[in-house]
Length: 320
Image (cartoon, rainbow, N blue to C red; front, side, top):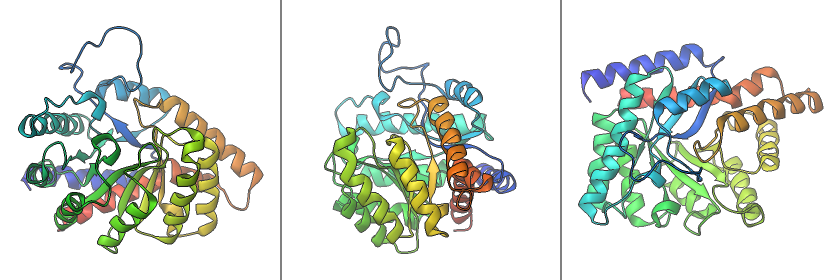
């Protein structure tokens, strides 16, 4: 890793550790270079409309969010259709995330994105090395749903192995919106490197309809409480299940109560709506269950947990 990358990681670790008790962090947001959009940006709103780093900061300020984990927006990264072209497009989207975090180091925690199907395994492995060793990303994500591959397939395993070998944390879209991310598949991924964390985004939600997601919601909760290496971002998930997850994890105690993180999935979800709802939910939980939920517990789920998770991941990468 370059000296500038090492210094950036060290500064991020210090900031997260020193401010973990106060930070509100969105653990799932997507940033796009809207100055070079894939298509027309005019017209009516559509789901997942690309937003820039500056757009995200404006929404963060309005929603009372201090920092956000950001990665590229797959709906805004257009693949030309060949492996090399797809790789260039995805690398450019990742580079924008790196640049955004460099410009706003106390607002963004950058994370990478690789695609062993669209880019080919060899290119995905090479990109993983660039993202971690050159860009300094401590988290690298794969999206089996968006990119249509099984979460526990052999190519994914090879990429996960490389991510872990380089000191970073693998992350996954984990939702009921496609058959590519079953609970048993996530379990097999987590078992691949015991003692190393895996971040599963959406905790079984994602783009699935409410009834379609019910089974995976329950399986995700049971799996997370049985497997301490799995951590979840509570984004794009029905609020009644988010509340049930919080109660179950809080009752389970440590380390599990440290394994859930609030998120919005911006721009697919609005930060103001999600974090406003979370604040109100915690107020309700503190009134209804005063012995279980405290202001300190609420702050942990709203940002403290992820601050410590991200700092530990950065430190692991830095000390590799």
